[in-house]
Amino acid sequence: SLKWPGGGRRSTSYHNQRPNSHCEVRASSMDQMDGGGAGRRVKVVGKVERLDGQSLTYSEFVDRFMKPNLPVVLTGLTSSWPSCEDWTFAGPDDRRRPNLPFFAQNFSSPRVQVADCSAREYTDHKRLEMSMQEFVDHWVRNSNTVSSSGHGEASSLYLKDWHFVKEYPDYVAYTTPPFFVDDWLNMYLDSHPMHRDSDIANYKNEVNCDDYRFVYIGAKGTWTPLHADVFRSYSWSANVCGRKLWLFLAPSQSHLIFDSRNLRSSVYDINEDVSEKQFPEFNKAEWIECIQEQNEIIFVPSGWYHQVYNLEDTISINHNWFNAYNLHWVWNLLHEDHKVAKEYIEDIRDICDNFEALCQRNLAANTGMNFYDFFIFITRFVLANVIELYHVQKPEDAKVNSPEATHHYVYNLMQIREVASKMISAEAFSIENLCVISEGNRSAMSDVTKILKDDGFRRLWMTLSEAYECIRRGQRILYKVRYLNQKGCLSVTCLKSYCNVVDRITFFMRVIRGPEDLVRLIDTALPER
Image 1: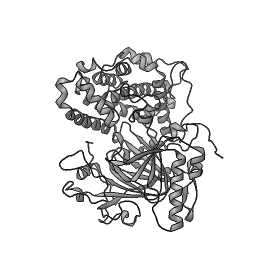
Image 2: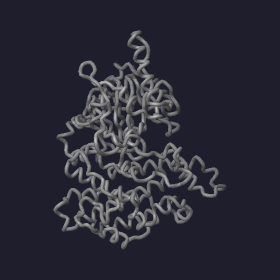
Image 3: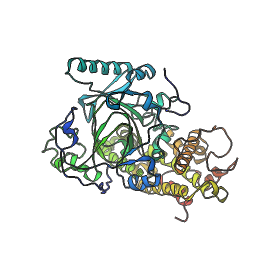
Image 4: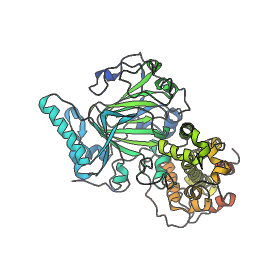
């Protein structure tokens, strides 16, 4: 029977850094694969570095991997996860295998998204919807056919993007390692909708995502086509069981996998016969390879294109996330995709009542957020970071704070300031366009007092505060959520039963009309920097 552990819930800017490993050009491990597209030789020039996660500090992770935007495999971080025990059973040679009956009995989701790895649909596999029981039945049926006859095909169906944490909040399958808790994307989505426009934000809209925490379950041979992650976010992916083959291409080489005539079309499968006429520079690409074992976590940096294969029956947990270190990647993607959206409908500008609003709607539909969504997002993180910086700089709170905490908040605000400065000149934030934005966007981005008193913002601020306490102490588990109706301040670093930080902020700025006001607020908070 199911045991429920207590607590908790469920490109355009390129870096030129390359990994330090230099290997001879050789055939990749795909040549030994049984999966789709195996057999093509690609130029592999190095391997992803592998480190013991328990011996790595957070600052070392930032300096060596997050800031320079380099991949790494971390070991030793999943041993206490309930999922590693509940979701698997022992197989041959001490290899764990997916415990499919456990999923069918205890997580009987009525609908899960499944990719058919044998069928292409645009730039991805064809997607299907089925119940968890149907997915398990299909897998077992195909596995039995292969086992009894000695031939046939394993299941080509790959369960992807399952919002497990949202669906089963009382079952704690894992705890996020401290390296990845500074996760602004999921902090925000836990307490705010991504979209405020009524014609974008509805429950049927696929891009109005609840969160970016996923579970993947796939048989040996299932795979994911070449891609860079949503929003050009970071991601981390942990193998609960099974092995994966990853092939990475650094952002500085991503132009090599795009159509020379249409820079918006990229290679779908690096193992198929890639057209030299369409992709004349593809063979110049130099790939970094990694075989990820069970109980290992891989950090995928922003803008790195990658193709992934399941070498065994595999279950993995994945988060997409971003923070101050890769916020500029998100803005650069939105900026470039906005140009594409604008070019696509430029011929109707003169007959359109609100051309920019239409561009923003299309941007949200195609990319997952638009300029206004992103501005509302960074506004809340400015306010949360200003509040926390206020606390760590107060002398009476010094005994519970450190220079490291100050560095986090100052760095965050400086990076947001850099991005907001670039947003000032965007047509979307002209006086004319701001006068006609939706009421949902206007109320979400303007009234500072209302924002600061909103329960959703207070949850966000509290979670950010706790995340940095987790990083500072090197703890795996965040503090228990406090009651939101308590009077005063929710910062874990505040020693007062009542704190006037909200009044101090609204004294300086009551209304944020656009990026220029946000820059001014940050400058007020960082007067000496």
